[in-house]
Image (cartoon, rainbow over all chains, first blue to last red; front, side, top):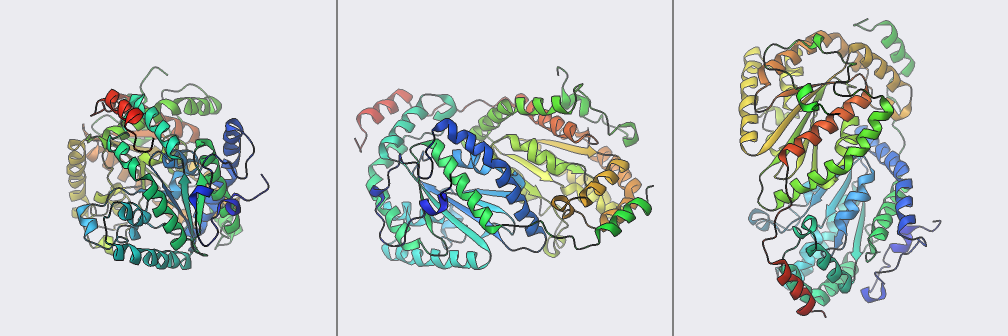
Length: 283
Length: 283
């Protein structure tokens, strides 16, 4: 556990070849599913404590925040990560946005228009379940925007994220990397039970024919928007327990680096103790 | 555990006398703090399952949702309830709003203007940490609005909540009832440690002089807005563990009554199984 998940999972700048990343890999972790569950539970207290400190900082004039962007093919485990990794911290400090297909109104604006109001406030952990990256992923694969417009968006995203980072937000972008075979198994399992079949739509199968185009679109997105200030991480996703653990570890390491401290009282604590003891209006 | 928390905690219509409610009471529960923690943990799975069913229903055309309004004096335990009771369910199905003192812009609109966009979407559990009730509580006690305006607001709230209920939202309004002595102890404890002193502001002590006026404002609010469609619950709050357990139980009973079912597939499951097996474009 000594090696940093952040460092191991961060995609180096330059050309990206997703086929060189094994979705079954478990970088930084040699245990099994049970070990991962134990480790996840064990890190909850520290993560939760650090998150509350950042929240407190945000209430006392701090400007720092964290934005976790989760991208991945359907069934890649985004929901489980939000539930079990993000779910380790106090829900009051978390703001989750699930981005769906844009509405009629949203489509009439620039693609970042609907994203801007969703960036985390000071002290908060913002989570994007899908994000502005859909506008260079599905938009590219399915031709929802012109090639020129797609090109423009990479630069617009970089400028947008640069501004977030300059404003005090740590931007973590995770691509949950699953194999097409694993997706097939997961779609099959979804059909097996009423508590998951509601998530299935028949077009999920049709969409699979674009798998190679999606992988290419991800590679281009990772190359064009993997920056010093907002790097991409590839999180192998074929083992769901690894995805949850890895994202929790990445959050933990990020909060550790931020190292938020409890805000110092802006009043004389002893004076307030005395007031409560002696001047209390209700005593 | 056989008796309903919802029924026991619901305030009967008519005149309300808060002094007749003991903040140390634990209606519906005869165990101690440890038992309460065990019970809270034990009900998590069922609550979580029911919440996910409602969420699924919301994604498939359902219109039902739940709104939990938490009101109470400072230190009454709202934060702990959000964390430990609401925290039992998937954060993706929860939308928490913390209402602060209204901004300049908000004050230029009707008091419900900022509340309207925060009501839960179909399938969601919305949580208000403070709410539109501040506009008839602190507003009344500190004279932030004219007596005529305050009068108008009770009716406006009833009409607003009536509309929510008609639209499919179950509205649960909980007043966390603590004693002035318990608040004093909690304020003292806040001062003892840097992980809580950031929540303290010296004016918290001054505000205590209005305690009787706040209790009266609560009584009037409970009388005027405790309706058949959106009743008030008084949750004794001097034992923090009871507040958490009671609200979790109230949520559980509410979701049980809603009895959401997994949406039936709108497609032929066997047909889709066959397609995945035989027509998969990637195979």
